[in-house]
Image (cartoon, rainbow, N blue to C red; front, top):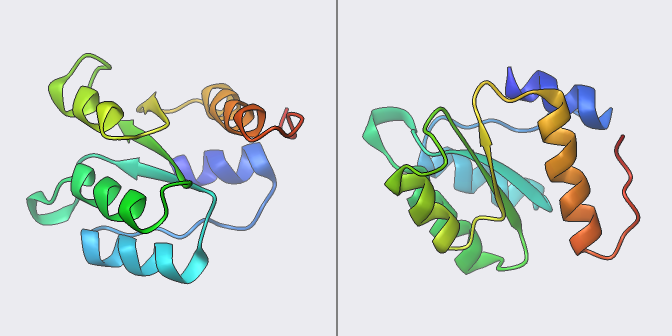
Length: 116
């Protein structure tokens, strides 16, 4: 669902997806995205916060947006934000919320908002 929303919001290519930490890091290294949408719950009990740490250690300028069904005040969400996540989207993520996050990233980067 999120992948379809990203494509709808950006009109861009299909984003890479991964179910586990190793796959996420491999996709990140291959594609070198500016923005990563990261679920906190990964396959086999792995944690998205570990992927967040890996990504930000490798590329501190990457914007990581946490995507989860957990509420904003959940300890795991709060930990992700305090460890450098750029933002938060609650599942199911609406296209309008996705657009707001992407526009915030553009504004912070000094670009005029590209996505409407």
